[in-house]
Length: 113
Length: 114
Image (cartoon, rainbow over all chains, first blue to last red; front, side, top):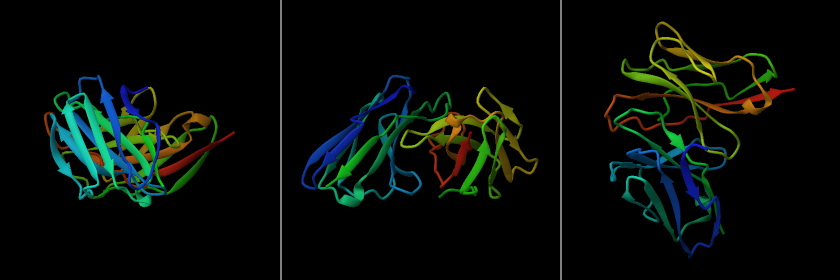
């Protein structure tokens, strides 16, 4: 248990569905990240939020829409996804001021059918 | 982009030391070496990090060469539960910096056998 919780753990959705992934941490961290891990590929950094402000978007398609309402919660809103978007989506957080290492959640296994 | 090179796979007998190498020949002076591991389909887990001195904690030891172009992660007594993909990452880690994002390569699949 790392203190970073992701829900749901598993999600199956159709290409026309809209769903959201949730990440929360109560570690007092101020930076949160979304990563994507496709089968047999390295983790890809998607979005970075520092103090609730998005500071990085690594050319992620607009069908992925992040939201960070406060420093403890991070969402990834999904709509009109493609089968190739099926992957493990991982959330991480860290404390920029205290310079901690990143703590990862257990991920959401997403399958798009 | 990942700035490290690791062998794709290694084996180790249970109870023996596992030595995982990493090359980072383009490392900058303000970049630290971090190690994480990922057990199948779980989130990556932090192991250890260092700048230029050797480091040790309850999980592992990190040996960094004097020129900082390579390092070795040592698991002193590997167990079956240490079977995982091990990632070596370099990143800036200044206090207060908004940098420090992690870029993962393909890592080394360590298999510990009985």
